[in-house]
Image (tube, rainbow, N blue to C red):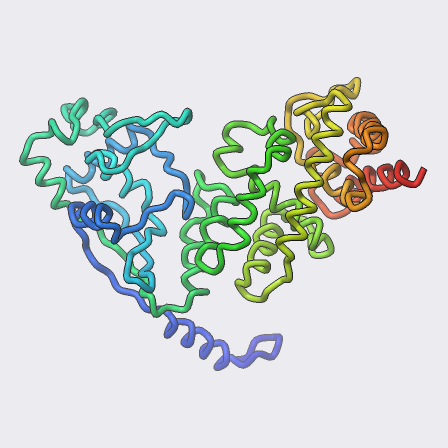
Length: 384
């Protein structure tokens, strides 16, 4: 039976069969002692930048160790075999890191960057008597039992099609409640090409950019929202015509296209870096001259005064609007910067701009209006 679009059923079946034949997998059971040795020898690569950040609390880590001691079933981990035959972990970071942290092989840090030290068991609720033990004080028989605990590993062999490896990781790591969209993008793109991903990360460290987005929340920083804002600028600046409503899918599609997942979109790294640097150098100068400071992308009060609550709508309006003049602005022209600053100061509280911001304004038309509000007024300043 053929589909309504006329594609023969046997053609679809053949495509499925060909994709299956492109995947080379195997399943192995590893003891945690083996995994620890592989990690120590550099034969198992664990990179938080490659997937979700390590977010398990000490209690969650402890309960995982308790589960191993009680021989409770645990989900499998997923590995990719690289060309050099080193295994790269693509799913299971929390499980493996919890064990390595308990053994003292993996140094975790708190939010301030201070080392936490090896795990001391806490919040074990099935056997509370385990609480307070470290790896070194655990009874010898339990230490041996823990080392000999096994976990199933699903391994994607190096002979597999790289695109299928990419999609496998993407599907494993979407839908999880602790993984942000940008963390998924950062991780999955590395399976194809890491150039654009590294470029975005490097741009997010620009001092002027960090000054301008300083009001995003600590949780947004942890979830790489700063990097998503960089991506958002390039995607909306270069591919606005392709945007409809779902910004998350749009950003992912753009990142994939520049990275050549299915087709390659041209991207001039040198030219785009220059535009990015000048954009945020100008916006910081505007922020400082206007007295808005780090609230340049903040929401506003009823009186039009900027607040410290970051608004992606203000961000889009300003960073996209300024693209209309960025090539013509002399950053040393303080009088011109002051006039542009006056536009920003007035515009952020202008009802004509604000009616295109807020809930439900993610679609194409409000976004275009936000951009054009500032673009037209910036152009008027340069033309006057």
